[in-house]
Image (tube, rainbow, N blue to C red; front, side, top):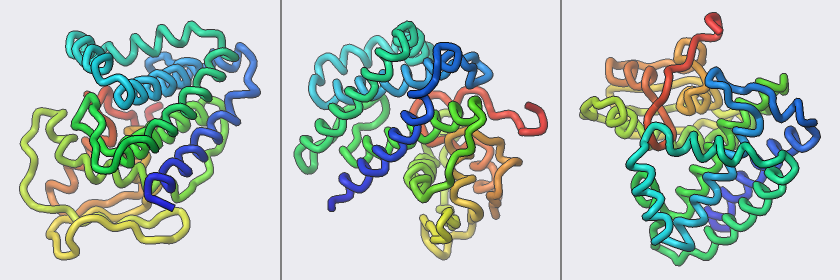
Amino acid sequence: MTLLDQVLGDLDAESAQLDGWVAPLDDAGWRTITTPEGWTVTHQIAHLHWTDLASLMAITDEAAFAAGLEEAAKNPTGYVDEAAEELALTPPTELLAAWREGRTRLHAALRSVPDGEKIPWFGPPMSPVSMATARLMETWAHSHDVAEALGIEVPRTARAKHVAHIGVRARGFAHMMRGEPIPEGDVRVELTGPDGDLWTWGPEDAAERVTGDGYDFALLVTRRRHHEDVDVQAIGENAQHWLTIAQAFAGLPGNDPKRLADR
């Protein structure tokens, strides 16, 4: 099994889990508010579906995707949200069927990309593995929004390691999105996964370190939890600051998460 197959398998599992939560909902359930900004369950699925379609376009029609990049540059803070608003007008049963079909097509397209070829994106071009990991990260994050709104306890699985990986890799990007210089020096990251496995990144002799719960770190870098509400610790000024701005997704960071006590 290739690394791409492994990541797509985990993405399938995340998508199927969310699918199982939303499929039984009636119309009122689909209108459940999931975020402080007012996104409903419908908006969440619409957003995931739109991003799948954008990813598919980046692989199969680069000219059309380039045109989309130009439109996004004209409206960097609203382009994605407006796309979700438009798709959210689709009746839930149709939207769910379209999301299922779209993610199946995307997985097939990712497997068709020649070895060594990069896929254009809103950020830097990505390999098929990186794009699949990014889709898993987004599905994982938006699944939490839906589950919390519906009162569902999300199973803590090792699939969160993919999310943590992107969060670690995006440390410099998080600073850039805040208009901050990227600090010099490495940060050693040591996290414990839900199965007890140790997840590590960075040189062992790095002066600054981040340690703690891997699943909580994934919640932190997807900006689903305030840094004071997770079991993640930092040693060193740069590492401590990173925990306050960490993000695992492209684009602007959006509003900072509120502490659980203030919600």
